[in-house]
Image 1 (cartoon, rainbow, N blue to C red):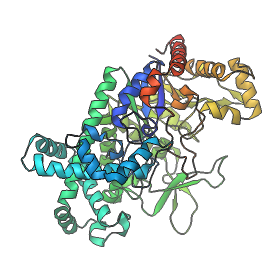
Image 2: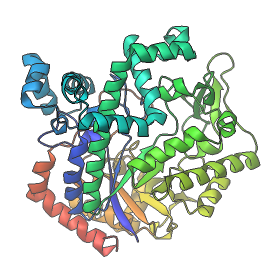
Image 3: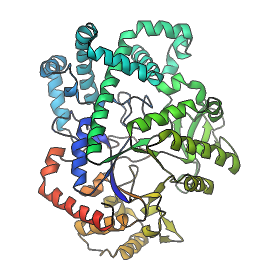
Length: 512
């Protein structure tokens, strides 16, 4: 059945109770708002824990831990108004007002404020429920046992990172850096309380996530996530599974029309042969975690599982593929796509297959019935835009991604011949109003044969701002906030009328 969905960064939305950033508890109301526009899929960008000062959700400290910055603190038993006032003080309360009123997400301020309250709430938990071996204490022990396969290493990593001034694990003393068993045993004793706090925070993240997802299910909304290709060098996963990453190499992308020398992302590539020796256990665990959190998820940079473009960190910096030959690349990629599909079930796997993609990757997706992406401005053949009605049914059609402008801004930056051709195909007048453009753009998108048509949330509400500009670092990347709270948006008559019209387009396209 064909559906319509919307992509958003959780950081971009907010409700009246939010602390300067979108929170897990905001998503059900946001989903109800989207339903008015006929949307039945909600894709959120990665939500895993980022280091202090980082804003990119693709630069996380863990591939498993939900970022506490997205917690609704008032929903934690130990948190009340008195605790918040005491933990923050007058200066912190003023900072909270500024964070709530900011037009962009201030990650540092929000993280600091929430950490102070979580610290105080954890002390209250230890002094009461934990000391009395109450229900919450038993719940925490059960959670820690159930999630031990990732939680133990993550909690110890975060405790050690705090001990060493948040510096990279590669700069820690040799014993804990190299994971000497005796050094780790001693560190677990020293940092037992700090590790327990991390587990307690993640337990509350899991509870709030499960409550949010249950509400979305009641709304009939499919929750879609985003699986980054690899993790950062300074992460709990690389520290605890170092042999499964090439720490002397840097991952990137090969040369293309936009980059003569290719791209260097500075990320550690997978040591695929070592991972294969363990029957891909870390990869399986990570995939199951995504299925635990989402009804469906996008696998970022799918071609990287077939072949990684790498270069040495030092010395000869010429790039090369980590495995050569179409047959070897196709065989490895097929094994991993099969792994994703099997381990994710019943969640649905969607492949990000943009860029230079060999035919054997397309063949693997077709053979495994895995949808790939069709970004309309890039779907051209012999100087002609492809008709979305000709796309394969097993695909995702979209005007844009989180790394591009929304079509509301992108259209004006297309080549003049591209604009002219698209106007002709969509019967879009050159002097069309914004509302008329919206109708034509969405009609063409929703008319795609693809089983899912995705829009950026900015396109639904006619915002030109982009989420991220690749290859740049700046205050406008990953900090976009919508200009109204969810509560305001739900009752706004202008937005309501716009959404009613969009729902009509969704219905006309048989996606409702």
